[in-house]
Amino acid sequence: MSGDSTWLWWTAAGAAGFLLLLGLWIWRKGRPFAPGDVFRASRFSRGGHLFPTQVLITPTSVVHYTPQWMGKQEKTIHMAHVSSVNIDTGLLFSDILIETSGGHHPIGCHGHRKRDAVRIKALIERYQTEYYRSTGPAPVPDSANFPTASGR
Image (cartoon, rainbow, N blue to C red; front, top):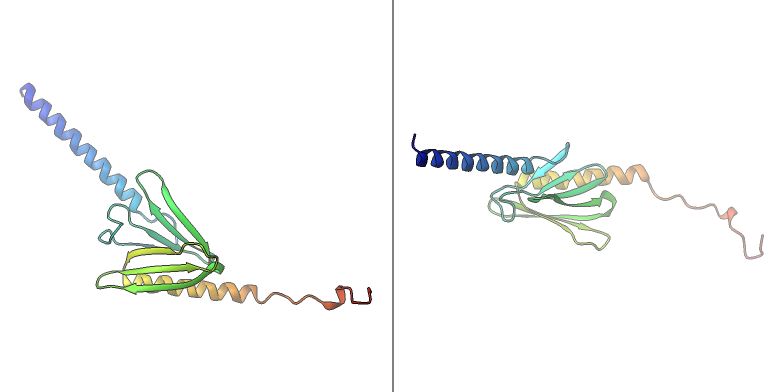
């Protein structure tokens, strides 16, 4: 081999290695970030080509997770603070808007499959029902423990 062909071979091998590492990095960032009910948006939807947004639904919270080149962006809403779940179904994908009762910005997720969007809504409703059944109404304080107008 001549000096020029060796240089080209090493350049091509270096570029292939770089592309392989880049592909592995993107694949690693796109994996589900937690065990459980994690729903990933499609890579073909807007805003999620390299790193699709993910939504984790647990019995106590909703986690909106967006991987980035370095680090991540994560937003969590407690199940008691979810006020509504809206699904906007398009031709190919569904958008989900999870609104809070605390006045904070809602969680907006784009590019989920319709069945995933329906499942997200069903899980949130189920976990909210379980949450409010287990906590029950607040107990009414006993009036005997409060002083009366006569001071007793």
